[in-house]
Length: 133
Image (tube, rainbow, N blue to C red; front, side, top):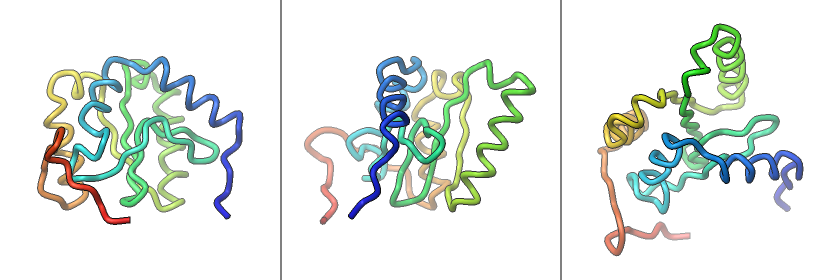
Protein backbone atom coordinates (compact mmCIF):
# COMPACT_ATOMS: atom_id res chain seq x y z
CA UNK A 1 0.00 0.00 0.00
CA UNK A 2 1.45 3.44 -0.92
CA UNK A 3 2.64 5.66 1.91
CA UNK A 4 0.44 8.71 2.44
CA UNK A 5 2.07 12.12 2.57
CA UNK A 6 1.87 14.24 5.65
CA UNK A 7 -1.45 16.15 5.29
CA UNK A 8 0.15 19.42 6.44
CA UNK A 9 2.89 19.08 3.80
CA UNK A 10 0.27 18.23 1.16
CA UNK A 11 -1.81 21.29 2.06
CA UNK A 12 1.29 23.49 1.94
CA UNK A 13 2.06 22.13 -1.56
CA UNK A 14 -1.50 22.98 -2.64
CA UNK A 15 -1.08 26.51 -1.28
CA UNK A 16 2.18 26.92 -3.20
CA UNK A 17 0.48 25.75 -6.41
CA UNK A 18 -2.24 28.35 -5.91
CA UNK A 19 0.28 31.19 -5.55
CA UNK A 20 3.03 30.18 -7.95
CA UNK A 21 5.37 32.79 -9.37
CA UNK A 22 5.22 33.91 -12.99
CA UNK A 23 8.42 31.95 -13.73
CA UNK A 24 7.04 28.77 -12.09
CA UNK A 25 3.81 29.09 -14.11
CA UNK A 26 5.75 29.57 -17.34
CA UNK A 27 7.98 26.56 -16.67
CA UNK A 28 4.93 24.49 -15.75
CA UNK A 29 3.41 25.35 -19.17
CA UNK A 30 6.40 23.55 -20.74
CA UNK A 31 6.44 20.58 -18.33
CA UNK A 32 2.76 19.79 -17.84
CA UNK A 33 0.83 17.03 -19.60
CA UNK A 34 4.00 15.18 -20.68
CA UNK A 35 4.86 18.08 -23.00
CA UNK A 36 8.62 17.72 -22.58
CA UNK A 37 10.00 14.44 -23.96
CA UNK A 38 6.81 12.69 -22.84
CA UNK A 39 7.98 12.92 -19.20
CA UNK A 40 5.47 13.23 -16.37
CA UNK A 41 6.28 16.09 -14.02
CA UNK A 42 4.53 16.98 -10.79
CA UNK A 43 4.21 20.57 -9.61
CA UNK A 44 5.01 21.53 -6.00
CA UNK A 45 5.59 17.88 -5.17
CA UNK A 46 6.13 16.90 -1.50
CA UNK A 47 9.32 14.93 -0.85
CA UNK A 48 9.55 14.68 2.93
CA UNK A 49 10.33 17.06 4.51
CA UNK A 50 10.58 19.33 1.44
CA UNK A 51 8.41 20.47 -1.45
CA UNK A 52 10.05 20.45 -4.88
CA UNK A 53 8.97 23.09 -7.41
CA UNK A 54 8.72 20.38 -10.10
CA UNK A 55 9.62 16.70 -9.96
CA UNK A 56 9.85 13.91 -12.50
CA UNK A 57 9.60 10.75 -10.42
CA UNK A 58 10.52 8.31 -13.22
CA UNK A 59 13.86 10.13 -13.68
CA UNK A 60 14.38 11.11 -10.00
CA UNK A 61 14.76 14.71 -11.16
CA UNK A 62 13.81 17.87 -9.29
CA UNK A 63 13.68 21.21 -11.10
CA UNK A 64 13.86 24.29 -8.89
CA UNK A 65 13.14 27.86 -9.99
CA UNK A 66 15.02 30.32 -7.80
CA UNK A 67 13.80 33.88 -7.35
CA UNK A 68 16.03 36.81 -6.44
CA UNK A 69 15.83 36.11 -2.72
CA UNK A 70 17.83 32.91 -3.34
CA UNK A 71 20.86 35.17 -3.93
CA UNK A 72 20.94 35.97 -0.21
CA UNK A 73 23.81 34.07 1.45
CA UNK A 74 21.64 32.44 4.14
CA UNK A 75 18.95 31.38 1.68
CA UNK A 76 21.63 30.05 -0.70
CA UNK A 77 23.15 28.04 2.18
CA UNK A 78 19.72 26.58 3.01
CA UNK A 79 19.17 25.74 -0.68
CA UNK A 80 22.49 23.90 -0.90
CA UNK A 81 21.83 22.00 2.34
CA UNK A 82 18.39 21.00 1.07
CA UNK A 83 19.87 19.97 -2.28
CA UNK A 84 22.50 17.79 -0.57
CA UNK A 85 19.78 16.04 1.44
CA UNK A 86 17.67 15.44 -1.68
CA UNK A 87 20.69 14.15 -3.60
CA UNK A 88 21.46 11.77 -0.72
CA UNK A 89 17.95 10.37 -1.30
CA UNK A 90 18.82 9.68 -4.96
CA UNK A 91 17.37 12.82 -6.57
CA UNK A 92 19.15 14.95 -9.18
CA UNK A 93 18.47 18.65 -8.62
CA UNK A 94 18.53 21.17 -11.46
CA UNK A 95 18.28 24.88 -10.61
CA UNK A 96 17.28 27.74 -12.87
CA UNK A 97 16.84 31.39 -11.97
CA UNK A 98 13.57 33.23 -12.52
CA UNK A 99 15.39 35.27 -15.17
CA UNK A 100 16.51 32.19 -17.13
CA UNK A 101 12.94 30.86 -17.21
CA UNK A 102 11.35 34.20 -18.07
CA UNK A 103 13.90 35.03 -20.78
CA UNK A 104 13.85 31.67 -22.59
CA UNK A 105 11.71 28.90 -21.14
CA UNK A 106 12.37 26.68 -24.17
CA UNK A 107 16.12 26.83 -23.49
CA UNK A 108 15.36 25.72 -19.92
CA UNK A 109 13.30 22.81 -21.29
CA UNK A 110 16.17 21.87 -23.59
CA UNK A 111 18.56 22.00 -20.63
CA UNK A 112 16.31 19.65 -18.65
CA UNK A 113 16.07 17.19 -21.55
CA UNK A 114 19.82 17.23 -22.13
CA UNK A 115 20.54 16.70 -18.42
CA UNK A 116 18.49 13.51 -18.72
CA UNK A 117 20.35 12.45 -21.86
CA UNK A 118 17.28 12.92 -24.05
CA UNK A 119 16.78 14.67 -27.34
CA UNK A 120 14.73 17.78 -26.57
CA UNK A 121 11.17 17.28 -27.79
CA UNK A 122 8.19 19.51 -27.06
CA UNK A 123 4.86 17.82 -27.67
CA UNK A 124 1.56 19.67 -27.38
CA UNK A 125 -2.09 18.90 -27.94
CA UNK A 126 -3.27 15.90 -29.96
CA UNK A 127 0.26 14.83 -30.94
CA UNK A 128 1.12 13.81 -27.36
CA UNK A 129 2.02 10.14 -26.91
CA UNK A 130 0.61 8.17 -24.01
CA UNK A 131 3.00 5.96 -22.07
CA UNK A 132 1.81 2.39 -21.56
CA UNK A 133 0.81 1.70 -17.97
